[in-house]
Image (tube, rainbow, N blue to C red):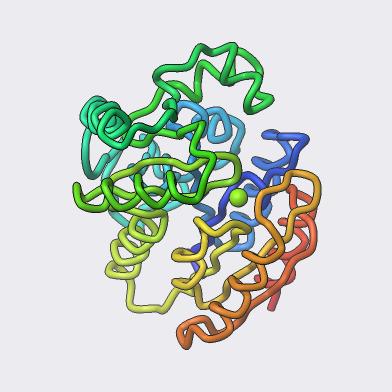
Amino acid sequence: MIQALVFTDLDGTLLDDRYDLSGAAAAMDRVTELGALVVPVSSKTCAEMTLLREQQRVPTPFIFENGAGIDWGEHQQWGAGWVETPFGVHLQGSSYPDLCEHLVRLRHQLGLNFRGFNELSEKKISELTKLSLQGAHLAKQRLASEPLIGLNTEESVAALERELSERGLLLQKGGRFYTATSRRQKSDAVAEIVALLQGQTSSRMSVIVCGDGPNDLSMLSLGDTAMLFSCSAMHVSEPAAHFEMKNYLSDTPTVRRLVKVSGAGHEAWSRALIEELSP
Ligand SMILES: [Mg+2]
């Protein structure tokens, strides 16, 4: 029986700039052994997140592309038969081709110069992200959201944000890029999983959410415990944004505990989680 649901961002939280997937998977397995279900939540694609899941001893569901989709996986060993969930990939919102078409139209309409990942080569994405060419190939396999480069002014961000919002779409700020998505954030997918699992048991599971950036704020505010990671090397969130996030979470009545974790990566992550889950 699962005692806690742990939702965790990847970059700047469970992962740092070493990008150590096997270390991250081992840390997730250790926390699973303590009676938690660990669900990674990221702006990464399903293809990228599958690489992490392949290294887990007990594979768990994950949320990809900022909440646009959930991959429940095929074998729910973690549920040990007490819970029934869907299987495989579930997507919400606009399709990727529709989203890209909207963006091209808006670029012309607003006279902006941004480019989406679908218009960039793997080599260019690799230069921008420091991913390998193979990593860039996986990052291009998108199902529902589009990272954008070239949105260099506050005015261009505001103009695009306004037009997208009129079309039921969102512009979200991640670690390196602004990303256009359907009106669905990480928190929507987190809430969906919590409702589905909590609805199948009478005992209350605690919800722990780990994140570091502004696009984690909505899901952090759904946690009984919000763990705010402050990353150093990866430049994931600017200090001012972090300060505002702390204030916001301190004022969120449903967040019973706000834990500040300095550092990122699987060592800092597992230390903080093990401490939180230990009786
Ligand atoms: Mg992050």
